[in-house]
Image (cartoon, rainbow, N blue to C red; front, side, top):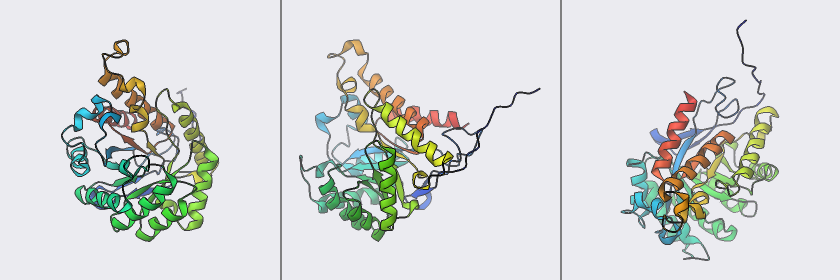
Amino acid sequence: MAFEIPKQVYSGSIKTVTIGKGGKAITLGGETSYPFYVFEGKMPNLPRIAMEVWDVDPGEDWAEPAKEPFKDVLGDPVAWAKKCVNEYGADAIALILVSTDPNGQDASPEAAAATAKKVAEAIDVPLIVYGTSNVEKDAEVLPAVAEACQGMSISIGPVQDKNYKKIGAAALGYNHTVVANTPIDVNLAKQLNILLGQLGVKDSQILVDPTTGGLGYGLEYSYSVMERDRMAALTQEDEKLQLPIINNMANEVWKVKECKLSNAEAPELGDQAKRGILMEAVTAVSLLLAGSDLLIMRHPEAVKLVKSYIQEMAG
């Protein structure tokens, strides 16, 4: 008698969210089974990769191997974004408005919005715009970005429980997607999605950011929460958790000492470039297996590795 793989029946499915516009718009979600369990269900939209762009030169904040592929465009977010798309095949761009940090340059909402608009106009792939997770400043910056990018169908975040009304209203008014961010907790993620729904934001306009830890620095917590999120969505029919997941992971990986220590400082750790790229790729793959639909990554070589993994798993 031929062996048959036991199959689980899923009563729920992940809703779809489309970001961007035109021929290179991306549809995320749609899964009817656990990640890559294509023998049990469908995965109509494979996970995608956005590449990270800062609106300022990262300087010493970035490890040298991470800066090397972008050395000719650092400090010019428009040129940087175009390079990610044209040379490195980014499916989307994640513009991080580092300049708006109140503890740093404290750039104005108007200046940040102008930068976001220039980047959005320069690329033909979806744009995701992140603030600095400062609740008060993001509540000023992201609505300004939403207004400046009216009609461009961008995604704005992080939207948190203390500023969701102002940012959510701006997303509604200018027809953008929001990135709902909560601190590694399934119940908090569900609650924020409910609050956004009560505000009028449709499920088709919400991406879930569960907060991401890097390899060896909290990844296990992120993985566990994402896993529980997907279990509730697919087997318990929890509608407010049936939304695509985005992971803003790049900085969480590359800020750790194992990535930033040079070959001279830590020869026992092996080549700095290789270890950084592999730490980013392993983190990304782990998040994909937990249910991520969209990854924000940094190094082109790590992106290449993860794209090949996605194709291999989907085949």
